[in-house]
Each structure stands twice: as structure tokens, then as C-alpha cells.
Image (cartoon, rainbow, N blue to C red):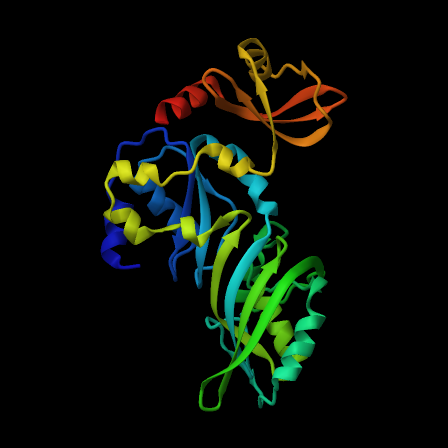
Length: 321
């Protein structure tokens, strides 16, 4: 990102306002997820903002940003499956598993398409990964990457993740340079850098990641995402029009609608009785006008409140649409 955009956004103070909704940002290369969030927050003049999980600075792609009332439900999206398009450089390993790290080892690449097919099948389904040292996972309250930068290697337990779909294509990027194009659909917590390294080891030559793009997270994809450059060039009304409603985060929830009296009691944290089937995740709406009230769950015919919007948040979301 250019220095002009950075100085324009970071150093100029703006009058904040209540903004509620979800912005699907196509995060640019070289920017941390938090920096991208702060720039979008500045452009929208939003009072409150958060994101639904980070992307590395060297990764680009779909980064859902939550504003206002949507921040109450951002944690729900952390469990969503993710889809990535990546490129791994074969024959070379680095300290970080990606292009930022220092060279660790170079090996000859003697890999055939048949080798790639065999290895691809081996990595489909449930697998175990050892989280990389250069990650934000914490040990004794300190991120692992801080230990790594100090030259300290911390023992990490392998974690269970799942690779739902995996496409691997062997290509010659230039004479003597082989890369592996990777299309991955995976569970939360999967490190694509580690996946690339492990696949490289299984191929007998090692690998490190040189490109990573998140093309989807849950039901959110690149087709509905907007870049910071485009967002910057828009008018304020156009920026607000890019926001998805707060309930876009609750697309996999069952829906219950309540009349005015039940809605008021539900917002006060009081359980409501009805002819509802048991359900672990419910999005609750008030009628006339239809407005999101919050989430809850149903057990034994009772609707039990979970995360609730405040009356002022409800009125502001209604006014915005």
C-alpha cells in the first residue's frame, strides 16, 4: 500500500459515527489484518470495528470486517471453513515457511505428476499439523513469533485439522524452477504454510510458500469483496452501500420471529416459550418492522437469549436500511 494512502488514513482525525454491518475486504499484500481494519474503519468513520480472524501480511483475499453490532457475532465466523489459492516453491525451505524467511535448505526437485497425485491423496481428510513458530499462537501469554525472532524454539503439540478438498498442479515456473499450485478447502486453524512445507517434505524436496490468497471464508467470497483502493475512491454513501447487514454473519442459524411483546422480553434476557424444535443456533428477529434482536438457542420449547443487540443498535440498524 502506498505511503500517501497510509498517511491520509492514519494521521487525519475524523468524526466517528455508528456504523453497523459487515464489509468483505479484499486485503492487499503487505498489510496486516489490523492495519487493513483500521484503514477501513477510518474510511467509514466507524466508532467500533473488529475482524473475524487474521490473514498474514503476505496473504491477500477475503477478510470480513465487522462494524458496530456485527462485532458481537464476529467470533461465530472463526469456525467457518476457508478456501485458498496458493503457490509453493519446490526444492527450497525457509525459516518461516514462506518467502519472508531466510534460506534453510536447497534440494534437487525430482517430482513427477504421479508423485503429486499420490501425495495429494495422502493429505486429504483429517490430518495433524504442528503450528509454525512464526505464528500468533501464544505460549505463556507471548506470541510464538516473538520466541522465534529471539531464536527460541518452543515445543508445539500437533493439532487436528481437516483438508476437505485439495488440488495440486505441478508447473515449471522458469527453467530449473518448479512450483506447486494449490487449491485448498480446509477447516479452521489450518496453516497453509505448514501444509505446503509438509507436502514438500512428502515429495522429498521441501517447499516454501510464495503466494497465498484466501478466496472464500464460509459463504463469503471474493466476488462480493472490495479493495481498499476502490473503497478509498468511493463516496461515503457508496462505502456504506458495500456493507452487508449484521445478520449476514448468521446465515447458518435457524430463524425465529417474535411479536412486539415477546421481543421486548427477549431483549431483557427473559426466556420465551413457543412451539419451536430444539436448536443450538437461532437468529431472532422482531416483526413490524423486521429487525435482528440477537441470537439464542432453543431447548425444551424455550427460546434462551444469547448475544443481544441493544435498543439503540436496533434503531440505528433500522434507520440505515
